[in-house]
Image 1 (tube, helix red, strand yellow):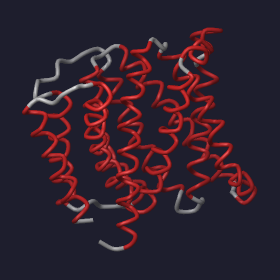
Image 2 (cartoon, helix red, strand yellow):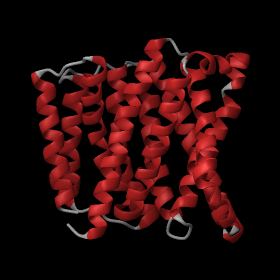
Image 3 (cartoon, helix red, strand yellow):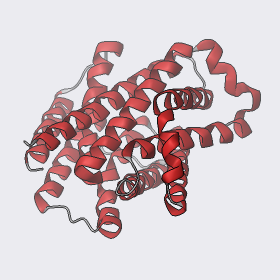
Length: 288
């Protein structure tokens, strides 16, 4: 594996690790009694604060950005916010199992977007290993049980479609705009959109999470930012398909942290899913 691929692997593991832990910490925060919308609003406020601290030097680069590039950066942030909100609504009217698996269909949607927007053709063996990892994620998340359709499933699939487009669109923007600036706009604009939207649903209640769960808010905000940073660094190096496919391994880290922090255990079928994910991920990276 070359130097660039070694760096990409570092970022791929990083985004899966941070996101896997993020899911578990969010679950702990919700179990603690935080309102989901208030939680999301408060986390977004902290995300903006963190991004301004660490990415403020990127603001100077905006004066060198062309108008159509600035337009694309704003669109990227808005698309991200829309995906987050649709995912939230969908999660509330379907099961956690359905949402957890269906959102991982994202690599399937990346394929056509990458072909039409980036003119990238994915090798057949990479697609095969994607399906291997998808099978592993299915076994790990669902314990091998068939998914019973729910009303929110279509929204989860739409969110997966939007996220796929978002990742491919980000790669296209990064061909001309510095990666760090793309990350800053993606994080900052999407968080700002959520902050502007949620008060219409909750009113003054949006501030309730600050008073009762500040620790979970700050921790999830940090994990979210780290996950996005690693994800976009990986997209820059190996493209949206490999990044999104490897992201399936995030369910491994979620299972690990759920065992450590929540005492949850895996069944034999789920362990088969773990092995399948690891096998598919290994060959996916090896062939990259």
